[in-house]
Structures are given as structure tokens and as C-alpha cells.
Amino acid sequence: MLSPRIESIRLFGRIRCVAGLFASICASSASAAAAVENLSVFSPATQSATSIRDLFVLVLAVSGVILLLVEGLILYCVWRFRRQRGDQHEPPQIYGSTPIEVAWTVAPLLTVFVLFLVVVRSVTEVRGQSPPADSLRVIVIGHQWWWEYVYPDLGIRTANELYLPTSADGKPLAVSLELQAADVIHSFWAPRLAGKTDLIPGRTNHLWFDVPAEGVYLGQCAEYCGTQHANMKLYVAALPPEEFRQWQENELKPAAVAADADIGRQRFLSLACINCHTIRGTPAAGRVGPDLTHLMARHTLAAGAAPNDPAHMRQWIANPDTLKPGSHMPNMHLSPTDLEAIVAYLLTLN
Ligand code: CUA
Image (cartoon, rainbow, N blue to C red; front, side, top):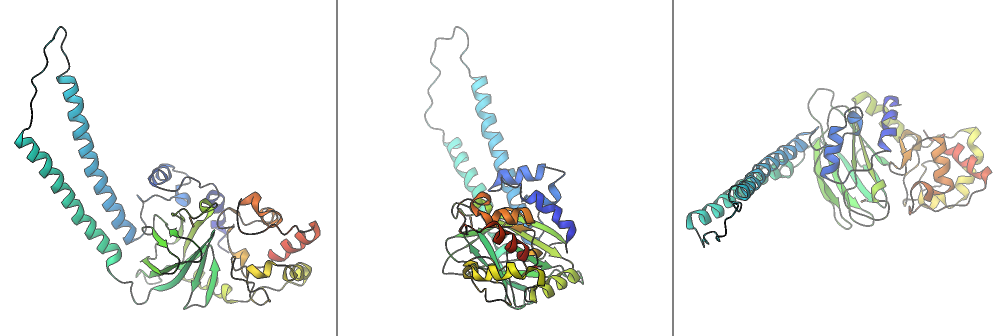
């Protein structure tokens, strides 16, 4: 399923420079990979992100003009009033000029006031209204270092990849996120979709935006949350309604039971793995780590740290620190036979 998107994951794994404006600029200037790797606030895909982009461009332009004006005047004065050859006189010393002081007090005040009004307008556009009543509700829980997604109205609980349906009739469907944290503060930031919003332990923050056009939108945890903050990537995919329905149906099924993976299944269920992971349809019901019921429907392992393929899965389980140093998944010191059996079992969880 979603095969064309698998390619995007290879690129996804390479994203490292994401926390801030530099990222936006470097992402927007890269052309070939831009379609999937685009994290630029300059190419918004929703109304909310467009408002933020417009405000950013305006502030950037105003600041740019001020920069040119101030630096230009300084350079002009340095050049125009430089010391002449043979000139031994001290220049006239002038103290105070009411017109100039009024000008450079009033002009910045007016500039800041106008920018303040524009910021208020943008904040109202982005945060002011409540989400449409028919929004898709998703609870997002930030964990060290992965994302949990719960669709309370659809009965789905999954991890690390947020799937949204584009609307069939062209009317933008909105998604309403309820942001929570299981441990420390994280921040949800998919620059092309919406502004960053923190996930704070003990409270619920809200964020909503229109579902963008079909495609994959990447992001990154934007609040330092510990060792693997950088490997807490966001993957948001907007699917056509039919594809979303297939995804939804698959997610609702209990885990696959494949006869030839029975040894691995037994080994998995006999180990401490089940204290942290859920595989629906089995006794594994842990909530510390990601739900693995449909692990193979996801493109990455460990919240974007590696592509979800057998080699990386083997590496991840054999010694998590080699893929994601400091991650909370322990090294279970499995024998090679057990490792192979468990990997074979996990590969059946489609
Ligand atoms: Cu989660 Cu940074």
C-alpha cells in the first residue's frame, strides 16, 4: 500500500537540518528532493500556514527595508564624512537635534504598531476560530521519542504516521489535533501545515488546520525533549478518501496471524516486549512504546530514524542504540535465532 511514498522515506531519513529558518531556506532551495523533503514555511499547504507565511514575508520585508536604510546611512556617513588628507581639525560636536530625535522615535513606534496589528490579525486567523464541527479529531501524544496518534471517533490508535483523508467533494475537511505529552514538553511542527504548538504534560493544547492536498508533509519535534529530539520526526500523509478508507479498515483489524511466523510470535509474547508494546489480538498490551499491530503499514522505524525494512528492523531490535542512541527501547540481548524469529513475526504485521 502507498508504494510511491516509500521512496520518500529514504529522503526522510536524511533530513537533519530542521530546527528553524535555516531549515526552511535550505529546504526551499533544494529542488529535486523538494517535493517530499520540503519543510519550508515559504510553501504553505493550508490556510493556516498561508497566514503564517504572509506574516513572515511582511515582517521580513519591513525588517529588510529598515536594515538597508540603517546600514546604508551608516556606510554613506562613514564614506562621506571620512577624515580628509591633511585635515587636523576636530569636526563640530553637535548635541541633540529635536527633529531627528522625534523622527527616530515616532517612525519605529509606528512601524512596531502596524506590525502589532498585523500580528493580531494573523493570530486571529490561525487561532481565533474554533475548528469546523465536522473536523477529524486526532489526539496526539508526544513521547520520548515518538508520536502516538489516537483517532477517538474512528477507534484507531497508531504511531508516528498521521493519516488524513482529503475530501471527496472538494470542500476542505479540517483536522483538529488535541496535543498532549506523556513525559516532557514536545512541539508539533509541520511547517507546511501549521505553526508550531507545544505538547505539555498535564494539559491539552489545540491545533487545527484544513487537510492539505494529497501528499506527504514532513515535520519535526520543535522543542528540545532529550537525547533523541532530532529523531522525533513527523510524517503526515493526506490520502484520497478511498485510500484513507482502506488504511482505516486495515488499522481496525487485529494483528495478522501467520502460521509460519508462529515461533517468532511465541518468542515475542514470552519476552518483556509486551510490557511496552501493544499488538492487538495478542496479550501484548503495553503502552510505553508504539502500537505494533500494523507495524508494516508504516514507512519508518523509531519515529523516522530509519526506513522500515528487514535489515533496519533487525538492527533496531538487536541493539537499539546503534540506530537511535539513548532511546528507551532496551537491548534484549536476543540470541540470533530468536532475533530472526521475532523479526520474521514483526514483518507479518501489515
Ligand atoms: Cu520531542 Cu523534541
